[in-house]
Image 1 (cartoon, rainbow, N blue to C red):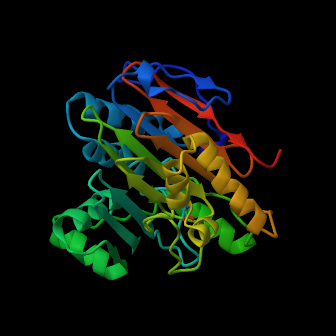
Image 2 (image 1 turned 90 degrees about the horizontal axis):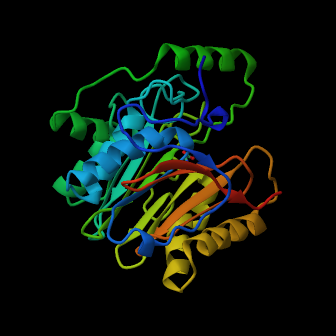
Image 3 (image 1 turned 60 degrees about the vertical axis):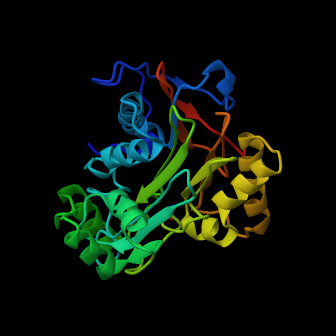
Amino acid sequence: MKITRRDFVKTGAIAGSGLLLNQISPSNIFPRSELSNSPIVVSTWSPNLKSNARAMEVLLQGKNSLDAVEEGIKVTEADPNDSSVGYGGLPDADGKVTLDASIMDWKGNAGSVAFIEDIMHPISVARLVMEKTKHVMLAGDGAKKFALQNGFKEENLLSENAKNAWLKWKESQVKKDNHDTIGMLAIDKMNNLSGGVSTSGLAFKLHGRVGDSPIIGAALFADNEIGGAVSTGNGEYVMRTVGSFLVVEKMREGLSPQKACEFAINRLYKSLKDFSDINISYLAISKSGDVGAYSLKGGFTYCFTTPNENKAITSDYLMK
Ligand code: GLY
């Protein structure tokens, strides 16, 4: 049986990680002073505890936050049971799995890919765009060509489960609500912040649709002096309000990550006329390691990981 992120609540040890894993109720402030220079990873959605565990493993090997974010997100991208990221992601209306991803490092460098097909790890292609080209974003066939030229393999990302879900949707045309992008932020031992986002986007979207995930400032923004933010949910609304940039700018003005996420959701709420079928959530971390999260509606969970613990937390939300 396929487990969706919203169904997923788990308590137990992460296989192989040795990290403690619990589900706890809204509590969003984790003072970095208690952690003193220890690395931190946060990511959207509780199933990504395994991805956070991998990112922390990378950080504890002494690697930087960019390596951690890439390696952590790759875990989710390769997971066939995740129906909204990478392999196993639900396809668009034409039955094609099209992927968006973005990455930012602590120097303000950014890279992204949009509408890329047949490549398992768009987060790694986004990193390569950032590191090997003068550009920030590559899209579609050009992004795929660039990936293949740089040694990535062409792979069929449409799993049997995703194909069956698409065939069923074609018969019924019933809307499918899946917006479970992974957004990850990490601070390494050198106190440098990086972030990344990866998704297959809205299930059964129009062929060609690109969401917020590859748009720097929408689904992802990281500023090494201030902190970073990521979003998950219906990207159209995040793009219109440049959400993650807004969260980081409110933190620059002095708001805590929690209050900055609340500000961005409140701003969005005021602009919305129809609340059906949508949810938007933000997750943010300050340079001092304080974490905040807030959602338009309930159900958003996120992962918080230090060398000593790896736990899923239920976010607070506006529309109670
Ligand atoms: N936030 C993911 C998307 O809308 O594609």
